[in-house]
Length: 162
Image (spheres, rainbow, N blue to C red):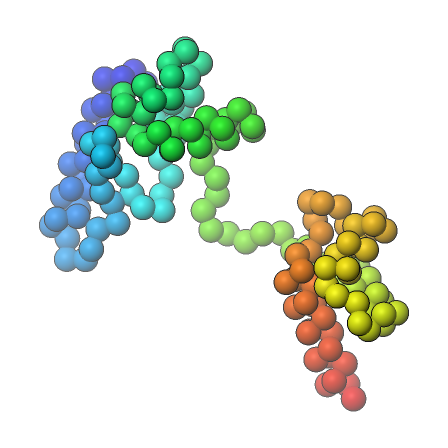
């Protein structure tokens, strides 16, 4: 996409959202930024614009100039380029959805064992031990909140049995 196309796209989006914002019965979630570019709160920048940001950066254009040319905030340009340099992808992340479950039965059993061995053990200590004993790694270790939820669940199950 060349600059003219990006500009035309931005103009069309501006007309669309301006129409939506001022002619709809509800309140609009979109707007026009200080550079005259269109945005929609909570929604990622379209892939064509994200790709153009990366292309311009590859051609040696400075982020501040990319920002002005495409009418996208400097912070947005910086964030997209950082993500691109880190992951190699300019695509937006997933909105919503759920994270993979980390409190698997094996992990919950280990948590219960640790708590039986030492009833005064804190959740952060349990988390550290899960890592130290290799039951979990940094990517799949449950959070302290998740461990506490597991403990509450285990405690309530035990009380129901009694």
